[in-house]
Length: 458
Image 1 (cartoon, rainbow, N blue to C red):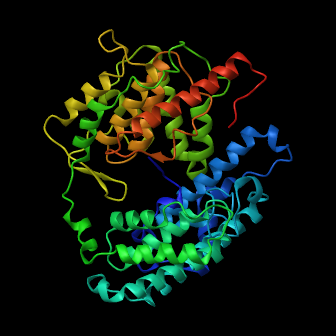
Image 2: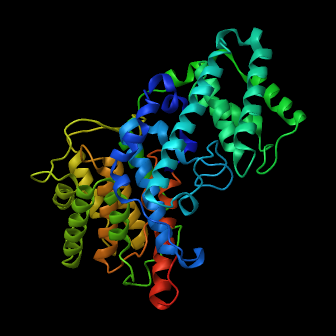
Image 3: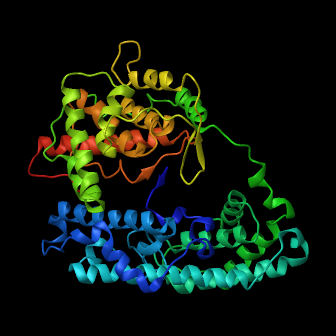
């Protein structure tokens, strides 16, 4: 699982300034031209303990601004919210933004903070890029350059220490920067991350700067562990069909291991979680996008009420409104790619039929007494990895999940854990994680329904 808007997962290819153009002088104009700039929430004077819905609105707005910046500039922009200490993402290098609670004030002040934070993040990336270039190292000659690799890594750690102030979680960015440096000089991404994790080994801690002995030991071990062939691993990995990988994992996932919060029967939510999230997040990006999703939500609930069978035709009827297309979109006609091209979903003559067969398993049957939340999670992931549409598959997967729950009379008053995350086709634990998230939201909904005076957070 990857949090879509979290900067901790960015690679050097994602952020390398040489690959991503940026005009600092036009940032103010660009930020103000984006959808979220038209609907900046105004900070409430309600005490923090009583402001759950307002806090959720502010967080959704910040997420929408991140999403809009990614659409305009690219994924490198995600670091604009990586604040020092306990900000949005913990332990980052940015000082011009903290978190929605503290950084969202008036619209003008808020947008100015977004601009300043984006510039600050970009300047840090440019600083790192220039510093990397100042240490031109050759992986093929690493045996003769280990002292240089060690010295470079030591200086990088000290720079991150200075930039982050060693607050909460600062070591995550430190490990990331070290991996970026290795990647820049030819070490395969996966190898670089593994070498850094092994060298650091949990010896960096929040709120504490590493002493000289620890830094020297980490950098010495990192330099010693490099091998001339560490750059070839990435190219040696054969192309995969991630749909086939998902189908293999799907058949082996212990779907029954996690308790089913849907076993207690139907529940009506005090708040319409899906609709509220669509209005706050998608509406901030583009009102038309939100209108289409809300129309699809209305249709799926009507289909759920009549007990409709979930299949591609039903999904496509909703997806027409998601995309704003003149007619229901067809099943894709070529292999699909996602996650920046890291995942590839193949296509065969039987792919559409297998998709319908998989979706049909979202219904409760005597032959497979699988829990409701497990079936909802599986349908969500089926849409993600069959990837039936040319665009908008994440939104379609979310709608499928909501439909499976609604068909059995279950609603959610919050969905924050179910959106803005990405699940990996090759990770066996991701389905179980998604089930847990659904269970968490469903348990919150039941508590609120039982005791309306205690509203679930967010």
